Length: 234
Ligand SMILES: [Zn+2]
Image 1: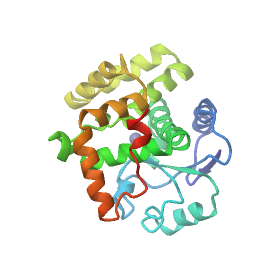
Image 2: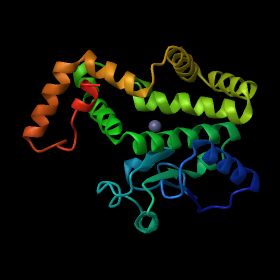
Image 3: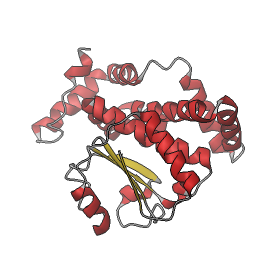
């Protein structure tokens, strides 16, 4: 795995990044991480409004929207997954950094192991409000909940349970929304069936509606790469 630093990074922070990378056991050609000198929301495209994200660099949708210097890195990289991390994450508290990097590395792992899983989740997310009649909360989307649970496990493994609990308490004390989010996350973590099973349950909860939408989309030549059978048939 390659680590590209576009800002001065302390030795400690670099060591932490390496520890997290090793924890995720991805090969050198599987993922590349860019630690950027730019904060989120400072590049024109909305993709860069997220503090960090993970993409397949061969996706045609990602290159044109990236700033030229990032496009060059994408073009030269032969990695299968690219993780962009904003400056505010690189310079955040250590546990927040571990959390964010772990979350994205788990997305890389999901995408490498089960590409259909990622596409299915993106499809469900796009039509979630139409099908479930409510806007999705981040962790209503199984790949997101899986990445959050993985980030917590990563902090616990690398820094211990006490550090994780301190981090969760600090997050809870930030504001009411954060408290609600963390409590919700912990509640969903217990009894978590795993990302494939969770995606399957969500799909089955509105199976007819989602299959119908997908058929309509296919008729218009959209989402043609997506096939729900792999998950509907187990
Ligand atoms: Zn995510």
